[in-house]
Amino acid sequence: MLRQTFIAAAALAAAVSFQMPAFAQDDALIAKVGTVEIHQSDLDMAISNLSAQYQQLPDEQKKAAALSQIIDIKLISKKANEAGLQNGTDFKKRMAFLQDRELHNAYLRSEFDKLTSQEVKARYDKEVAAMPKEEEVRARHILVKTEDEAKDIIKQLDAGKDFVELAKAKSEDSSKSDGGDLGYFTKGRMVPEFEEAAFALQKGTYTKTPVKSQFGYHVIKVEDKRDAQPPAFDQVEPQVRQIVMQEKYSQIIDQAKAAQKVEIVDETLRKSYDELTKGE
Image (cartoon, rainbow, N blue to C red):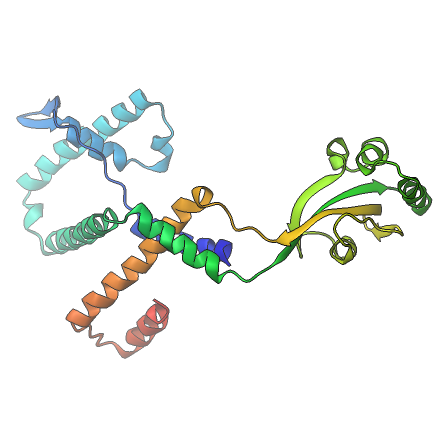
């Protein structure tokens, strides 16, 4: 179903949805560390990379924390350069990895930025069309403690009393203020006894015998029956966009693998890799 597909896409969304700060054209000078200048773009970058704890701070404190981080980095990196650490093999390997990772992210951002609203809406329509038909009912109920109370309510309904007014006067459920209205629900949402009775009723009818559940005794009326409605596009557009991004990511990876041979020499690791990626 559409809702389940959204959930399945959530994990990858975190991996392929990248946010970059929007740099101002007027890149103002913020501070200096020796002769090294720190500009607004540096501050924006540092803010975007603050930990989740610092992201909760008020703006001015967040800016100060980011600036403090930049200054510390500039001070210590100068000492590291003076010590020649930038020439170490491990450092160079790490820098190469970081560059590759940032290029990976930058390329994906550039591709995802090309996604149009029309593409996202088309994907939503495809999901909706593939959803199996599922019946849902809109029901009201009156919940009481004893079977005799429920039978008396049914007698009053048979005599022409209004269900909504009886629910407001007699029901012990929190829905009483709404006339016992439970809204629309599909199978699997209610306790079995209640669900079986509700889905067996025709539209506009109520139960002629009390329905017992763990909560007490119910008198149920079905107001409407229909096919379950999909979530509105506006409500789920961000999740649908993540699905499209997930699919686009897979296409990009497949194309890249087709263009370049990937060979894993370690047999055990190759099997683990194949197992991990076989569903991509």
